[in-house]
Image (cartoon, rainbow, N blue to C red; front, side, top):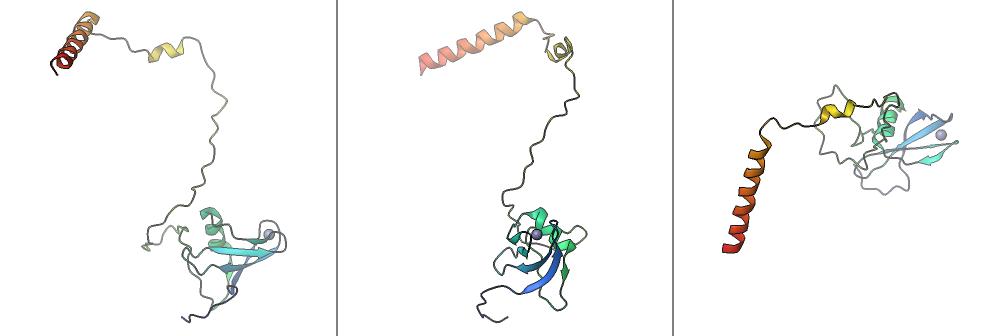
Length: 141
Ligand SMILES: [Zn+2]
């Protein structure tokens, strides 16, 4: 590879932007090799999220002869390719909303109460011994 500095990375393919336009796909030369696109509807989009990168990777029509590298955060199932440790950048965590269908029924929560089957007195005695031992330990220390 030549060490020439290029003001812009070459177009390596085209991708149907969800917004409607045909986007030009370029690829960052730096580590991570993330795709970025430019289209009439969105301008330049350098979003490097895994979902977007994977979408472009799968959907774009890459030019013949173009040097296309798989971005570091694209996971291609079925390929046993050993990738260098992928650092998840701000893993997109979607807020999970609880289903609203659940009804609260009075009395139901009582099932979760723990009822000690052992003699409570024995428990208290054991606790007392422990506390006494602690106290003694503190006094002797
Ligand atoms: Zn667009």
